[in-house]
Length: 241
Image (cartoon, rainbow, N blue to C red; front, side, top):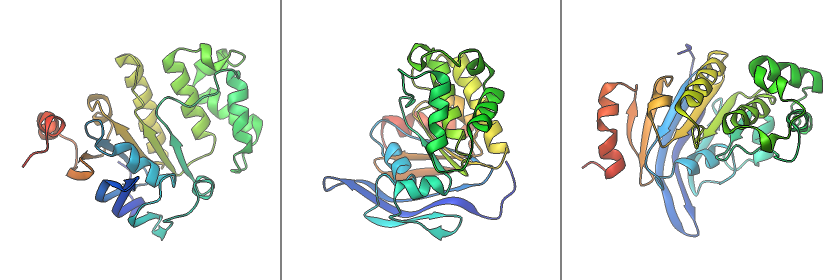
């Protein structure tokens, strides 16, 4: 883990609701520059809502969102994106009818000041398979290649904070391991990475910190070690006393 002076992304006492039903009950979570934080928990626990709050897509009903120590609660998602927050949602989020190259070129309109040549050079350097597929429609790529393209698109914004939702969904274990090695390398470059995962094994190999959310509350936080992996089943099957 990279040494840091404080959290780059911070949620303080965040409560959030949908249609009057509270789904987050006072969540506290920090992510520092150069750190990978794994947010784990069963389906319906509130993990994706945490990411939406962090990206500005779901304003909290109470609590605060901070970036670099500055309170950004309630700021529009577009402003947070320009400030360096990038969310890669579940389902990859590529344009299936556009070529790989055109998917990348869409990111020249994101307002982060990177040109076409720079975006392509960086993407193909990180993901050589995309260079070989640059003229291919994104929807015809394998699942792993589509996820690489989604990552490449997100990284084209040169983010300070990277939010990943269920990176492993529908992918073979070897592909997942490769993707998470890339995520670890991204963090080593100073990016704060928050990863939501239901299946913990792959992300815990690279995570510096882990948090388990159950029924909208953080039940455990700390350095991921053998004791956490041994206890995860109890968190997933039912909240511990």
